[in-house]
Length: 85
Length: 137
Image (cartoon, rainbow over all chains, first blue to last red):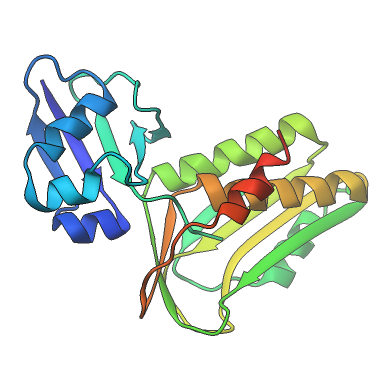
């Protein structure tokens, strides 16, 4: 299935990407699994998204826990903790 | 209920006056956030940011009497002394107006997708902001 993945702020800069369409292999059905899938690319992906890094996630523009399910056509975003106000 | 994410500055006085027109409103509490000391650029997540702000306002309405409310947050490059954010809440009485205004600010700081970047780099999230939001639970 294909999903749209977005990156913001420091993550966008570290990854050199603000958005991409990704065809996910079967078995990648949660936000946590998608994160692991991206970490497996190595390099900046591994260092920026590694377990232990404070990364917030959203599915279809709502904050989502790692266990949140993702489906074809979803918009999944990764970003650092927010600092507005 | 007005939520706006915009590059342009805002007129806090005009926004507050607009909230005072409801004859049932006995109190309008407001907060203005200002850029302190160093210039910054604010990034947001178009769509989700507005959605998150609306949700925070709805959460406040579920807890306090909120007759009307305005949340404006600026994005883009801002200089010291520039206004960043306005939260203004109209209610029948000051207790609800103060509480809802502070609640919206605390949740905005921890739940709404905005990120500040200064010349020295991206601003880190503060544990004190999580603590401030946590006290409303």
